[in-house]
Image 1 (cartoon, rainbow, N blue to C red):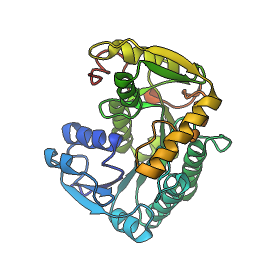
Image 2 (cartoon, helix red, strand yellow):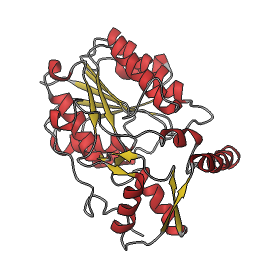
Image 3 (cartoon, one colour):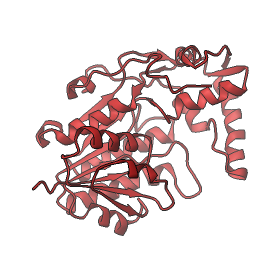
Image 4 (cartoon, helix red, strand yellow):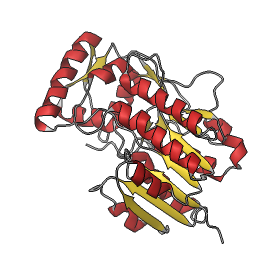
Length: 314
């Protein structure tokens, strides 16, 4: 009997839910147990729709004891935990770096066969963005403490419930203009959430030595500027929207971001933009030439189209 146990950190998030749906629909027999780790009070009602043998563990990703309990007996571990902006209880360094060190160290001491760590395209130790720097530190920690780690680095991930397109779609529904931060020339390579989930599945199903210790950059088939992405959003919205795209210099975007961050601190309203995200927009977010990518995993990435953006309904 197959006694492989999969532990997934961050399974209640955007990519995590898609991964579990794909496991349920395509690879149900790959693991005898799928162990879900989440914070307390996270919505896990979607698990009721799955026919997987699920164990649900609640705890803190920063707790050695909680992580050790989640990893105990697991053969494979996937880490999807990440944040887009710091909160009162979670900094970029704690979530993207220290927690990865914790997971990788415990995986190494617990006899785990494989760790798949989801990072982000554009991560760099030299970035002016704390998000990108801490993502790079997390990758370094994973490969150092668990050398067999597989690192997957997606560009902007899109699909139903995504953050990027849905955020600007909500803005477009209430505002006659959309801001082009930095002039809108930053390049991206958006990748569909299903392609990212498939990359994880392929990595889990491959012989360990095929993906062990390797880093894959995940992007869609086309590079688009920020301006082009907003035009696609408006064109493929249902019904199509007409909005003015207004260039916004980085300094002005940072001023707006300060106001959004203040509103978050005072009222708990999720910021539409942060100063760190403005820093991220100063660098292109595309797959590096010559890097391992989706094609190396046997996956043909989906194209941005009216079909793949059909969730943008007014």
